[in-house]
Image (cartoon, rainbow, N blue to C red; front, side):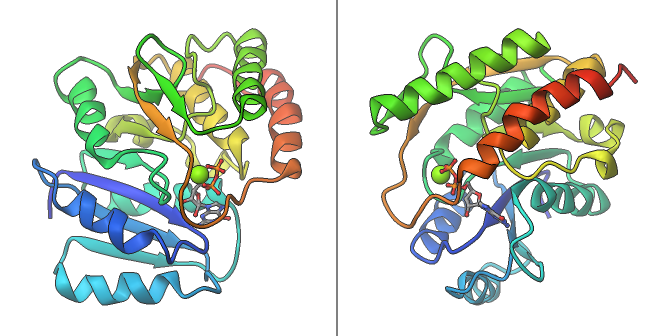
Amino acid sequence: MHERLVIIPTYDEKENIRDILEHVLRLSPAFDVLVVDDNSPDGTAAIVQGMQAEHSGRVHLLQRSGKLGLGTAYIAGFKWAIANGYGYIFEMDADFSHSPDDLLRLHAACADGGADMSVGSRYVKGGHVKDWSWDRILMSFTASLYVRTVLWLGVRDTTAGFVCYKRAVLEALPLDEIKFIGYAFQIEMKYRVRLAGFRIAEVPITFVDRLKGKSKMNSSIFKEAFIGVLQMRARIRRP
Ligand SMILES: Nc1nc2c(ncn2[C@@H]2O[C@H](COP(=O)(O)OP(=O)(O)O)[C@@H](O)[C@H]2O)c(=O)[nH]1
Ligand SMILES: [Mg+2]
């Protein structure tokens, strides 16, 4: 077992999962991986099981009964990571929008740079978005601006899903109270970490639109985020 665990939630990622796992497993220092699969109809989990035999003890799999959403997949992954003693716990997508090489910089920001949580950010100096249409960039940037205005997060890329947490951060949060499933989940995590008094650093990254497979985001996830931000502001208090 290693000190670092990358949690990758998957739903129908058979075109990406082998390549992304192989890339992560090649990194030095070493990262273990936990895939949280929601019974993907395309058989993603079977590919992961095949790789478990090749990479003994470094590839883990949590299988859930059906598509229960990104947020609760991460919560299940966080609990598993804590129970299994990991010190640095990462969130990353399966679709290569996040470059696995950037895990090293996210780790360094926490391990050497004094942050408790580091966020791979598109909207700080040096950050970029590649291959998204201008209207998707505008929507994402406007959403981040809206969230910053309502919540005063002090984070520019509020919906980012490429993150490193120190173990102590996840131990301090009431994980069972976090129930959002889409972008609202990413926002709520940053809001709670901030309110709990931890230090958040943004690390510039280049985010690349997925080449293979399909996005699972939809309008109900945007609605959840829009209303969810107002609910968070009303409900969540400093612990
Ligand atoms: N376990 C699980 N993973 C999901 C779910 N929805 C999306 N994902 C995964 O979450 C990551 C981000 O989703 P994606 O569709 O790429 O979202 P987008 O980048 O915002 O378009 C990918 O690795 C997906 O396979 C879900 O309901 N359950
Ligand atoms: Mg994606």
